[in-house]
Length: 113
Image (cartoon, rainbow, N blue to C red; front, side, top):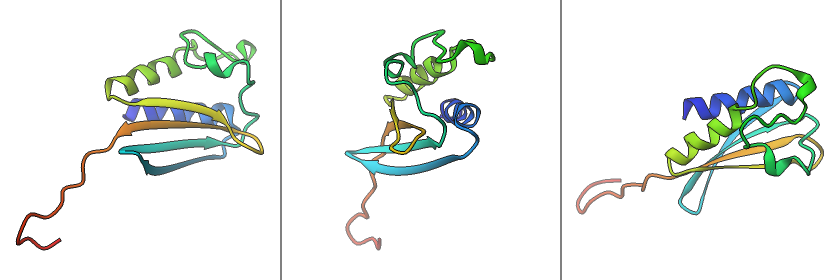
């Protein structure tokens, strides 16, 4: 989890102009961790490839081997999760890490909540 979030946040800082927001939500038995930036977003034609090994949206920017997002996705899969990417209205990108939520234990009979 630390490696996945570290990669998503560091990419958002590097490519999204440094203004990064991390939020959480719960949906359909999953916990979602959203990493949002306010950068230029991702070219629509490149969105399906951002998790491909060695893919770089802009090779001229240098740095990295293009493996970070593919490794992050594999680590999410190892935790029965996924990562979804989308451009945000008004600019920027949103990466959402979805993981199965642990069931919330309810108090047993005679126990106080």
